[in-house]
Length: 298
Ligand code: RET
Image 1 (cartoon, rainbow, N blue to C red):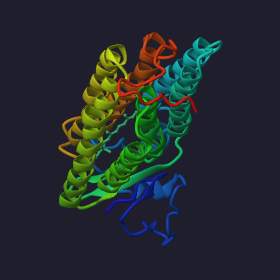
Image 2: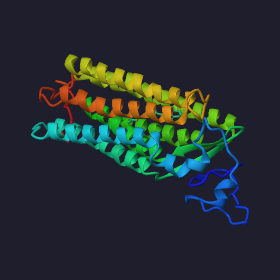
Image 3: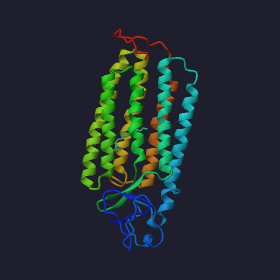
Image 4: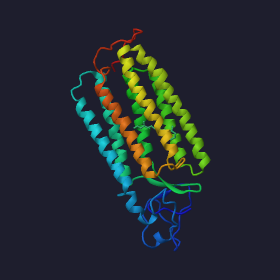
């Protein structure tokens, strides 16, 4: 397997230069060692001769920087708009809604500056780059998004905990799928992750919907919008992964990154904007559920 300069290679033997020096994972190789690198599919990764400048400074960096800008603006916008909220539940929701794009901003800045790039050799295709900061972002932000929905409908804590655990398992097994070097393993792990995703959807569409109904018609109809946004946008992630370089390779790495940027901005900023506009948040009217149980205030 050819070594990709400047990129830590996962699942392959350490590459050696003609002089027998092992290449140090995560460092850049220049000069004569560069010439010894066997070219790999240009469709999958940039030309090794230009690798350092394409990992940081190429079109993917521009896409990631745009994502960082949009997410940073979103976080700031939500934070500023939420100043002055008097309702305790609304304050809590806005804080979560601003924290989610803020976490993603950190991940995007890391990715745009070349942190955590690894090359995963994929059977028969050569190395495909992976930026694991994306998974670190999702590991925190997807449970927080579920928490927003849970707070919105005052969900049962145990059910919420179960959904968050399933969600974390989904992201972890998605990362295993992404890191697997054998094609069939990638699809098996993708399927495991997707099955867990169905559990998360069940939680949103069945459990939380029932809780929203118990809060009355206004919250129930507002929740329909939140759950539709979640259902449609979240489902696009596994589909996009499948079309990407780690699946059917129908799209190039840069296009895959651009798609994930759009989805991340839409889910993270989208939920924040919906919260700011929703009358079901913080109007202070929902103090009891329709079954008489009080809405939690702390
Ligand atoms: C992967 C690939 C493996 C199969 C599945 C996936 C699901 C990812 C999801 C990500 C959601 C991210 C969100 C980010 C918000 O900012 C890991 C892509 C099922 C659902 C909502």
